[in-house]
Image (tube, rainbow, N blue to C red; front, side, top):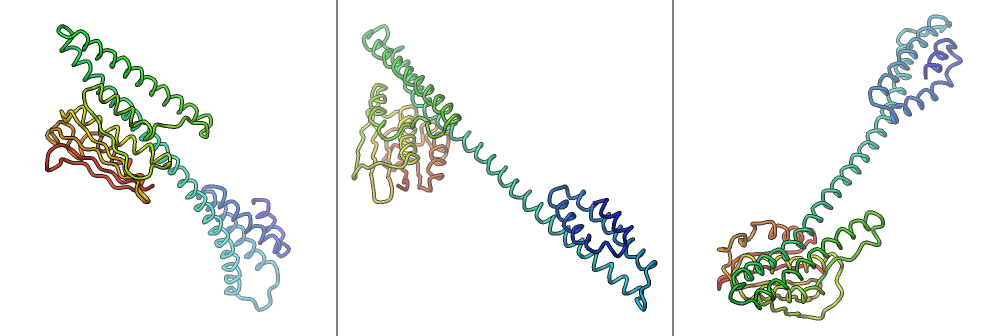
Length: 314
C-alpha cells in the first residue's frame, strides 16, 4: 500500500491505473484487519491521493481548470476510497457476527449437555438411593425381631447398590464413547425398563401397577428416554415423600402423542418436596417435557394423593 501511494505521488498522471488497485487493497485490509487498521490505511491513501492531485494540478498545465474542478476530482477519488473501505468493513462485521453466533451456539450446546448429564445423574441415583434408604430403615427396625426380614432388606440393598453402580458405569462409558465417536454411544434406558422399575419399587414396599394402553410401537429415542425418566422420578417421589403403599402408572400410545400418568394415594402436597413446581425432580421433569414441546402438570388430587401427567409428541 505504501509503495503504491508513493508511486501515486511521484508518477502523477501515469498513476491512474493504480487507483482501482488501491481501492481493492483498501477493501481487503478493511475486511481482514481490525477496524483501526482499516481506517488508518484509508486515511493514508486519502492523504497521498490529495497530495498527488494537488501536485498534478500545480505542475501540469490544466488550461481553464479551476480550484473547484480540482476539489471535484479529489472528492470523487476520496469517495471511491470511502466506498471501498465501507465494503470491506461490512464484510468484516458480517464475518465477526457469524463467528460470534457460532461461539454462542457452542456455549449453549455445552450448557445443555451439562444440564442433560445432571438430569441423568439425578434420575439414575435418586430413585435407587431412595429405595436403599427405605430398605435400610426397614432392616434396622426388624433386625432383632425378624432376622429373615432384615436379611431380605439387606439383599435388596445389595442388589439396588449394584444396579446403581452399574448404571453410573454405563453412563460414564456412554460419555467416553460419545467423545470418541457419538455414533457408538450406548443407548439409554427407555420404557422397556418400566417393569423392572416396578419390581424394584415393590421391594421397597410400594406396589406399582403399570397399565399399557393403545398399540405399543417404537418411539424416538429422546421420547422413549424422557417418558421413562418421568415415570422413574414420579415413582421415586411417591416412594420417598408420599407415604403411600400403592402407585399406579399409565402409559397410553395415542395418535401423534404419548400420554403418561402417575398417581398415588399418599399425602399429596403435604409431603415434603411433593408440591408441584418444587424440588429438582418436578422442575427436571417439566424441563424435559418443555424441551420436547410437550405438556406437563403435577399436583395434588382432590380425592387425595398426587398426580403427575405428561403428554409427549410421538
